[in-house]
Length: 305
Image 1: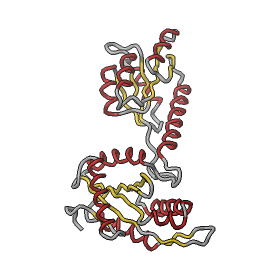
Image 2 (image 1 turned 90 degrees about the vertical axis):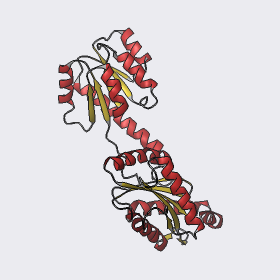
Image 3 (image 1 turned 135 degrees about the vertical axis):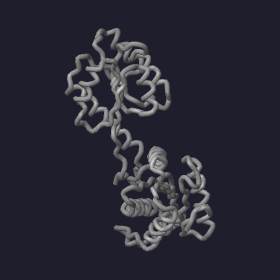
Image 4 (image 1 turned 180 degrees about the vertical axis):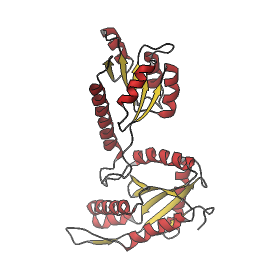
């Protein structure tokens, strides 16, 4: 089971000062699945890379003003852009030029004039490697849901979209009630079974635009774009009731388990505008749900029911 919105569109930044070469790139990438930006100088490339945050950069070396080497150095020194893979493209194929390119941190070097199939194949290979890497580092091995790193990556995207379209975003923390008692009574294998079963139930119950991650132990985080703030309670109570009514049947030992969950929620932008504030408020509301008797949804008093 893989998170619904795990796939991403790969972003390419193409940098070259020759107009005709940029035109040829546009023809080459016309029907490719990438999101592409173009820059005609080193200065423009540095400006665009901070905003666009490309995954792959095709970078000409010889340009007026700031050359490709300096652009590469600037990008890789910036912690916000240093993960980009840089492919140098140059007519200068002499060994010293290639050596300097790799010393500067380039991931690849392609000689001009480029062979279109070679370039497309190399980019496709880099995209595959990136997706495999993300899959290994952002998916929880037990449940198949996204993990904490996936959540941290996802919430930035959700906040950006919510702000752009003036939508509410609910951040809900879901915690299994008395989970330690399950482990102590039945063993950790049964505890793992409950976690996997609940993860499947949650994933199957998600709306298309929602996402969920397991961020530790018996704790999950759900991100939900919302049209009206009162919808938060309707949706989350439906989740809570569905879990309460469901009975988990272990396939081998005939054990039947019923569980409940407590849920704390925060709403953007009413409760806060950044992920840390929203998480802290949702966590405080989860604490209130636990103290209030469990098996309930709690939100800030400012949120309409």
